[in-house]
Image 1 (cartoon, rainbow over the protein chains, first blue to last red):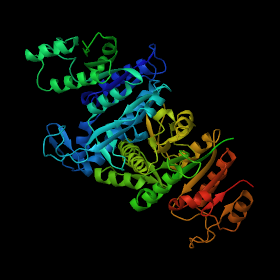
Image 2 (image 1 turned 45 degrees about the vertical axis):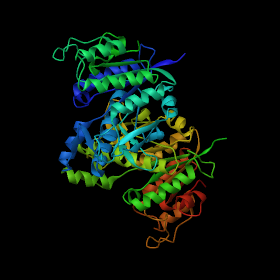
Image 3 (image 1 turned 120 degrees about the horizontal axis):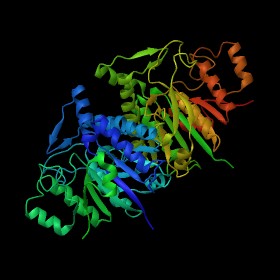
Image 4 (image 1 turned 45 degrees about the horizontal axis):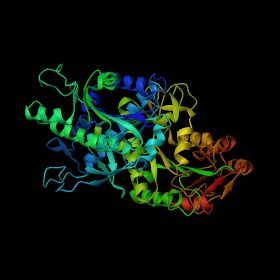
Length: 277
Length: 277
């Protein structure tokens, strides 16, 4: 029987807030660390970004940042900055803090162990706005699971920074949501994967103004109805489309909610679960 | 029988020179990559620093750097810089370049997998100048070899950045020569370790002015004579004392020479070998 693995993407609002980040990492260590009371030791894989800190460093260095529909145009100087901030500063501080809570962790990028092969996004890619050159931005081709499973099976939690490579020596800045999804899909061959997307809200809401109106569960049928009634719209649609695509590719469950409620997201008492029928 | 493992410290002069670094990494991949004609696949462990790039970034950010006898005083801002530069920019670019030469590699710090536990240097430590607070500088307590041996035995070359942690969440800037030595010593339980220190000269020289006057081999007896005759002096003495200490702790051989001559250093046709009697 396959064991359960939790692939957890933490949102930028957590990375930028030391108190929230510590609260999240403590819960992560309680669940997946060496003193865990759950059968999950090492079975948590964390994916982080860190856009605001990268933007701050770029400003300090006078490197102008260009965004197109929320996506960063990554020139050579910006690639250097995101590599330093994501793979260096944020990744290593998360690992050191997890170690202090007795959770053995290892911080990696997609270049390490050739875990994630990507290619530089074409200007005509459907993933970008047409005709825009995103620079050193990578779209994922393949996730190699052998290094990941070897570490997980040694009870070591993996912390992934959103940097990939093209196997020709080029590092590439890659969307952390996409990395979470592709990694979750690939690891579904080895584990029952639950994919958790944390963001600033408590889940998918019936009423966007009311953080207590969380919809506990959404399946394809209810998703159809929620869209028809305009309860789910705008930015939530691609998130949920991606969640259902992950289910189609072998992921067992997708959970959307607040990182600070990690315990409750896993036990099912908080957040929105996206499920098959 | 134990297999041979090469622990290789590359000097700052290589890191700062793209052409020299590429030449070194190509040789490293030929020796330790998946197309290696030697029985060394994955049996190379690389340790790098990157001081000059850190100094450059600090200047760009207006963070003043203080050095005492060549050692960097590491305040909080400087720790952030070295973590970004060493563990982020340099480490991940080396890994990506090795991948492009068909050498599977993984880049880590001492915090990852709890590989190297250290403590913040005391002001009265014999490793520093008395009475100086070096800030977030770490002295190594312990190297845990299980994650390293697991990766090496999967034929994955490990690339170590000189950042450690104290198990309480604090990252620490740590001398790369020391990391090379302590890692080599700890791994001697599992492998026949050859420790290579690369620097800007071809080896230990009979005549400091003549780069062709390399002393091929030094043992404790000849070391004594070379010191008495003032052929070895100043900065070379601590290097060689450390080399002999490594031999005392289980390392099979220490080799000193140019990183660009890696092949020849390993086959014994270049550099200085420091050996037992």
